[in-house]
Length: 248
Ligand code: NAD
Image 1 (spheres, protein in one colour):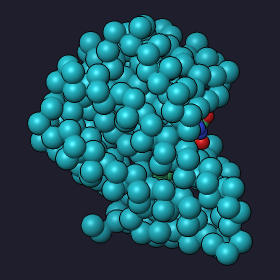
Image 2: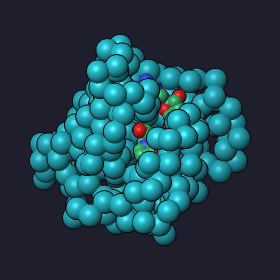
Image 3: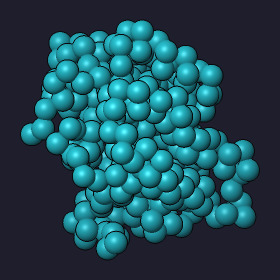
């Protein structure tokens, strides 16, 4: 597998779920990792469990707060001197309700975390990557952003926007050494999925030809490749991780 020896990676939402699996794979591949998570206590617990596997630091930050993200960026640069890899993974699914019953405050929160949070982190980190002529950004979108899941208008819209933002930023930074891509997973076995209604989960699984949830490690494997130096000729692209569900 590709090596990240000597690289510094930021993983948002790295305290649990897919983010934690990504953190583990990155540490095992030789990267130093900064977890940016709003749940600082859980992130510290995760880091203490993983400390033997490499250099890991926690920065408690809510990605919806641009000033806090800039503070985490500055603290990470103070600690590690540079950021080579940014994985925008922090996200929430929000409630499963028809659009006309969907609470406006939940709509705003789903957008703020899944979309604006990823924008904040790109905005904060990209200049230092351009300065060093190197960077890999991986945004965690979803099949919902391509197909639109029922009862999930905010989540589907936010993830579609993450795909669009990925395509746009990929072009903004083309030629600078910074490559920006996203992944579009079908359901993965994490605490987020454990919180979904049984009917919503069954609907999503019924659409997956491989007929099972993905594991967090399967997601981390693709992210690891997209975060590596070996990945050198893709940018602004959406990579499938859907057990055969997506056909484009
Ligand atoms: P999870 O709920 O298990 O973990 C999410 C992590 O993000 C948590 O550690 C949480 O504290 C952190 N977080 C949430 N809001 C934050 C904020 N405002 N600022 C900083 N950190 C914050 O979720 P997961 O299932 O591991 O999902 C990770 C990503 O993968 C999300 O973007 C999600 O939309 C996406 N995704 C998940 C699935 C799935 O089936 N699990 C499928 C497709 C895409």
